[in-house]
Image (tube, rainbow, N blue to C red; front, side):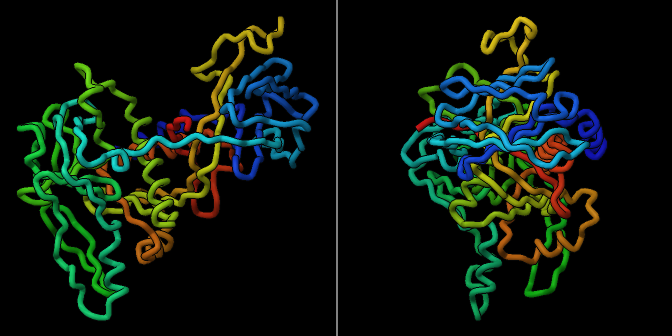
Length: 409
């Protein structure tokens, strides 16, 4: 069922007419214009206007790009690069950057002790935790800590079969989830559903399959999987399924955000945060059933991106850089993004790569609900399909960008 959805999505997505990748640390920008817009550099007029507006004009097209206030394109503007026929015209621009934007923290980073919170299902707004104050908010070890203990210890693992569970007023923070006491949850907000699942466990170099019972936790209203029951006293909730608010900012309802945008930002923030803490840049994304569905390799975190088409939905009237021959401009904001290499394992034939990543303790395992993993694959594939064709793959991996929400310092 999912593969059909993925194919439909890929067919409907098309390469952008204007693609701009700005590397703030390198102070460089790659601009790609499709062949339908320009054949030669002489066909393109590029101009700027303070504070940070960039106009790209051809004979029948005008695109206005709004950059962050601290980022600007400087003259001389462009250097032509070798032409790639299927992509169009490549140009290199020089950038000046003093951008101080901060990424908005994920749910895990934003939770603090001695503060009151309301947590709700991201899909429907059903309140899961109502005005709860956690006495302690503590981080858990990274997801592969058991494997690291095996490699570091010359004696049997002293932590084997021991679980780190919260007390009644605690909130424990994992890589992609939080652990709470069932006492924190609103009565009947969550429903338990049991099912058998195959989990992979490692003992030295040998692998074996073990069947276990997984108790999924679903939203009582929309029946979406939000986590799982860890014990009779503890529930695990995934950050991609929750929205959080302070009771002082709570109105009669939650403002429901587009699901794909929420997942995209939540995953991008966590990859950025985890890479900063653990200095690891490779991740294996597995469903809550234990099956690896995605391999991710974080490349760049200092990128601004513009990717647009002449038929983009955010086309707007503008009187900037006006010209009587051009009445409609395509106006876009450069977005903060992270650049990703990814390999989805649904139909992948690269079993040697997948197996090598499974064995590598430098790869950080991250667990999400299976449906959310599929949504993430959809997001990555959509991004990939809009890139210039020569930039979509790197060796066995595909290339994509995930957007980040930012605030100014």
